[in-house]
Amino acid sequence: MARVPRMRISESAQKILATGIYNRWYGICPSDFVKDDPVALQRWGENLVAWRDRDGKAYLQEDRCPHRGTPLSLARHDGDRLTCIYHGVEVLGDGVVAKVPGSLGSKLEGRCLVRTYPIKEFKGVIFAWYGDELHEEPASFDLPERLVSGEYEAILSYGEWRTPYRYMIDNNMDPMHGAYLHAVSHSMAAGSKEAEFEVVETNHGLRFQKKGQDSINFDWSEWYDNSIQGVCLEIPYPSTGGPGGNFGIVFHITPIDEVTSACFFWRHRKVSGWVKDVWRFLYKNRLEERHWHVLEQDRLVAEKIKPDADEHEHLYEHDMGVTRVRKILAEEAESQAKALKEAGFIN
Image (cartoon, rainbow, N blue to C red; front, side, top):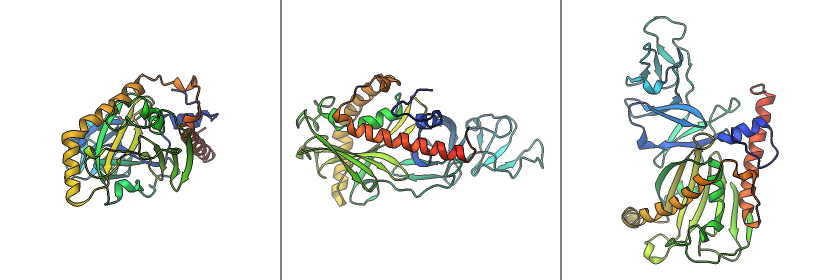
């Protein structure tokens, strides 16, 4: 297991932190990744299967037939159930074994034997509740305002990158890298390469911002943690960038495993009515390629950073936002590990 040494926490907490803390909603994949047939995927280091029933309702379950462990991602899709190809065991979308055709009346029938995750679909993404044994019922689904307010129009970009999820959180909580790594970008060429920062507490986390510089470059990042985690930021746009003012990003990430991440980027502008159509057209036909170029710069760096790089860091003042969020995550992992240990679920 890749060590997570940001602060002195227990081994149990490190294991939780390595693949994502519990009791949050996580993006699983874009909605259009899942059709009728079962799709094998991995999240939080666990093997999962996603599929839709005949009515289009999506399900996310552990990828394991309860009989002998054959992956349900190999199963036959039978409308409202998956039928294991090995011995024909039928599993419903709620995880209940509907039928064991080789042994009618089997004690397996009618029992919920396949873990099934609560899910929601929103903004082009299938989300799932990743709860521990003490929080199997999901919390409310509270996304950042810029994804739920009708004043904004958001467009999803998605990628799977070979980097620990925590390094991409670090990247987005680091406004200063924009003036260097993205200096040739059409939207991040302005502003000073020196800055003082401050941390401002918010209702759902914290905002890490440059002092005396706003709407010039990548000038602030906001950590959002309210049943779902993400980073919100804005990048000023020239008038040639079209309507809607500053270009905003809501970034959300889900660990695939300890060293691979599913990255969700919603790019948004404050537009409505016919201007919304102009923004979407402009984005798809002119801006999207440029934005992927910027993301590729981030991906190249993130994928080259070694998983244990944080054991050799020498941080300075510009990293205050990074260290604050690291501390928040580590403390949450420790709290969860302690609660699970006291309840007897872990040693």
